[in-house]
Each structure stands twice: as structure tokens, then as C-alpha cells.
Length: 389
Image 1: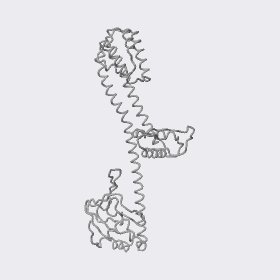
Image 2 (image 1 turned 90 degrees about the horizontal axis):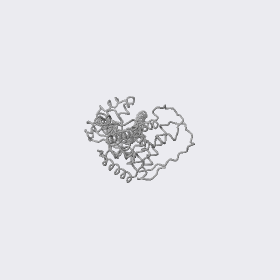
Image 3 (image 1 turned 30 degrees about the horizontal axis):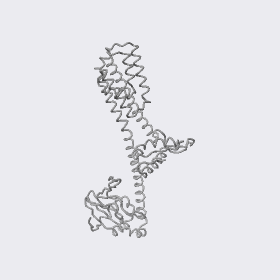
């Protein structure tokens, strides 16, 4: 940074700026007389976080960028050019800088120390009024920017949560779709053995009865690890004893659906020895496809539920007028949106909702933002584990 001699050209430059175009030349000359004229070379900082702000700065020529460090990241707030007024202003309560101001090219600044602000009021009321208007505009602009930043941060948190929540069912759908593709493409070769089987319609009905019985009961099946391993061993042994290939893969599917050795004996008694291997493959294939389709259906249902929760949370399909709001619905959709935060800190949620609570008139989206802020702040204040009521 260099202090430069002031030249007569500074007055005409100030008069060309919109803020000063109606200010008397004498008042502008007063600013020049009381100010320092400085040059900041490319890359130099005009100010930085924590630095005391004691001067009003008028950019006479050049440009500088303002960058703010927030949450470990640097964000560019804007590029200020000739005519922009920054720093401390009359009646401003600014004490220190919060961001970096770095020259993008040689930048010429007129700097007026705040000790002259009281004198400024006596020199020119119009000048003081113009600078107060600049301060008001700056406060409004930065308030709007801060509000947008908060909205973006909130959106970022929700996006991260949604990505986390959507990842599991989406991955399950992809995984099951790939397995379904593999199963379908392996069917034609094995289908030859199916169409050459010689079993009666009555035998087919009896086998189907066992099959559908296991499909219906599969949802209620709850085996311990030990029980599952015992059944796996029993089914694998049975398949090996009867010369059925790929016994381990077939056994895993059978055990998932609760097929027992007794069921296999019954099927053997129904169809006999010749078609047994083909029947086992057909049963495994049918049950496996049933399982894959069921898991895809469940995963897509979870995604659909999340999308509905997003719509309920944001009320994106409703108007912007006050309407009767179900507090319970808002709390439920908010909890779904923040489910990942509870999981990440192993926090239990205990809900105690009043069923008789009437609807209230309000803006549902704004109320949901209130619930979000309250819950997020509570979770952030809690350690690992615990219960949030």
C-alpha cells in the first residue's frame, strides 16, 4: 500500500459518482482535503477479518473482491468497483472487518477517518444524508444476503439428509434390479428342463400350495441367527442327499421363506425323483424373484414416502396464504426429514402429541422451518445418545 499525493482530478471523479452527484463541490473538496489517497497493488488486502475499521473508503479506480470465510469455506460476496463506498460510515456501529478485501488490480482508494464524521455534519448535511443512505442500502443488501445464505445452508443440510435417506433404498433398487436381470437372463437355459417335466396338474397344484403358503408366511418369519444356521445346514444336507446342485444358493432362498426339510419331503413325495431337480430350481427361482420384486417395491415405497414428506414439509403444492395447519403433520414430516441427524448421533426421539390439538391458522412452510430450527439446535446441543422429547 502506498500513500499518493492528491490531485485536482479527484474532485471531478467524486462528482461523477452517483452518490455524490448532487453534493456541493465544496463538501466534496472537504472530503478530499481530510482524506488519505492510497494505492493498493494487485493481491494486497484492503482489510481482513478482525482488523479495526476506522475509515470510510471510496474506490476511485480499480476493483477488489470481498471474500468471507464461513464454516471452513471461503465464499465470494462480490466485486466492488469505482464509485463504491465501503468501510465505516456516519452513525455506523461497525467496529471490525469480518471478511477479506483483496485488490484484483491496482486500486486507488480515498480514505476518510471516522474522527471527521462529527465535523462532516456541520460541513454538509446533504453529504451526511447521502452517506447514511449508503449505509441503509448496505444494511439491507447484507441482510438479504445473510437471509439467502441461511436458506442455502438450511437447504444444504436438508439435501445432505435427503441424499443419505434416499441412498439406501436407491442402492437397494439398483442392486436388486441387477440381480433380477441376472436371474431373468439365466432362465431360458434352465427353462428347457421345466417344459420337459412330466407332472400332472394335480401335482402342480399341490406344489403351488406349498409355495404360496411359504410366500404368505415369509413376512412373519423371525429366525434367530442360530435357528437360521441350523435350517441352512438341514436344507443343504437334504439337497446334497438328493443330488440337487447349487445347494447353498438354493438353501439360502428357501430358508429366507421358511421352507423346511418337511416341505421338501412333501414336494419329493408329490413329484417323485425325475423332475425333482427342475422343481427345486423352479421353486428357488420363483421365491427369489418374489423376494427381489418385494424389496424393489419396498425401496420404491420408501422413496415415494420421502418425496411425499418433502412436499408436506415445504408445502410446495399449496398457496402462500394463511391456512389451517395440522401441527402434528408438520412435526411428523419434519422428523422424517431430520431422521438422519438422529441416527448420526444415536439419539432416540420420544413423541408426545396431543391428539385433540386443533388446527391453527398460519403458514405451514414457515412453521416447519421453526420445528426444523428447534430440533436441529437441540440435536447439535446433545452429545452421543440420549433421548429428545
